[in-house]
Image (cartoon, rainbow, N blue to C red; front, top):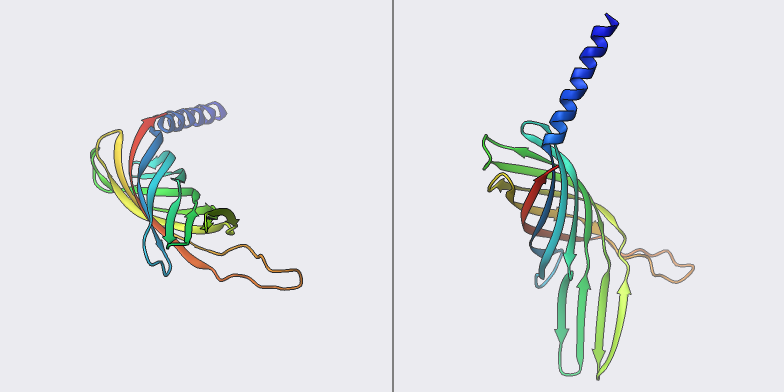
Length: 200
């Protein structure tokens, strides 16, 4: 009885291992992203770069880890005759996600949800009367959410849309003895990404 139990457990582990090896994927992504900040007057766009490590846990459900970095950040510029200001918001997201595939075949759509850790600061470059000065303002990291969807274009190529929902606040820079915190504000953004995946 013990031998048959061990044999059954071994077969199950071998099957799970074989299934996992054939359904693990590594994907690299690039595309276009735009800001959707709270009370922004103009949107800023840039190129996002991403990487996904996924595993199929059922025929239609993938879970995984993802990293996303904005190349160059979101940039706003304001200038007149004597003054120029360039503001750059950087952003890096480390997240866990799940994709639910709908339908059958290789070209099937999916919906996506995830939770992420949002990082990045803001850099302000001033130019007044020909003199330049740079300042970096720290923004507290925060936990946010990712919702989206996409479609598989081929066994290795996919198109994905993500909307990032996050509220963050500037780090406390008050003088000693004061207890003031800036208010959290929405630093939402969206992106359209083209991805290429490899089976591991």
